[in-house]
Length: 355
View 1 (cartoon, rainbow, N blue to C red):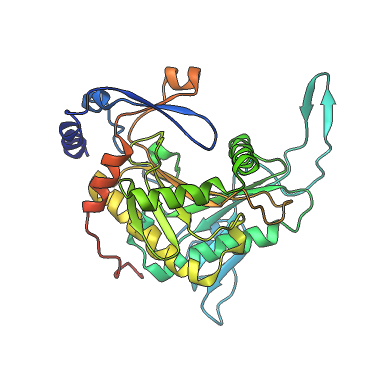
View 2: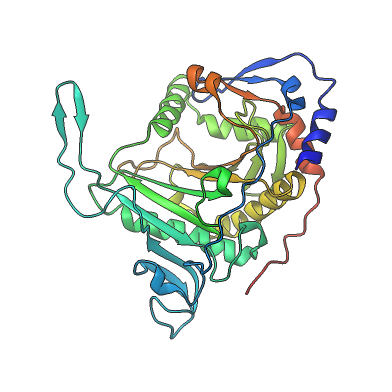
């Protein structure tokens, strides 16, 4: 990765003047500072500690809590081999499903019991560390599992918001290298989502349009920040990218809730996600990364102003004191240049590991 980032820094040498850009949704400002691309501080991949037996591999089902859901071969039994994608409760949950919220005040402060759900989606039964190495069909099934779990959990009146996310690599927060995702469902709307929804609603009230739909239209027309495009999805580096090579995947057809995704979209999304991840892993030499699905709260109907989407964030730089203190992010790679680099990477998504 060091050589790759040196090449990026060299390509950016002609872009001297830092630039401030404003995110049109939440109003956050970022600093595009290409001069900082020359600083020798890339986040290097951290090796995982040796754990011996992997609890996520087929044959080790007894090492996890009892499965909640699994796509498995006909005739095979729960908590046994034969599954393709498997969902289990997190062994060390941030929130617990049993109990009542018991909302209460403590002077000016608010509190409630830590009620929610925390689940782990095991992407494949064999020991694979990256989603990009799986087949498109495998990835499609993973996205269907996300949908199935959100549909089920939104029936619980205590729960308000479900966030699906993936941590890949120790620098991105992963504790086990076997490819997996997580779903945390909370009794409140997270502040980041609330800010997005508020900003999108303000835009809608002023202009009568969905800002995400406008962004898709403008990015498609402009083309400079586009990474990959299909009939139903656009993958691009956002105008006010917080991080180098940050990439969003946005459906072209307006839909506020991920769980309402259609089959034709899931079919394409498997291809789009594999393509984007392969491009990032090829160009950046397998960086740590996160992806997060942003969707609408459970207790809302179809919203004309909000638009579900996926944010893919490679972990190439560190958030430090300035970012924490100001809310600004410093990005050393302009999104136009990042997208150009990624467009040039040719990948073949037709293959993938099956065992």
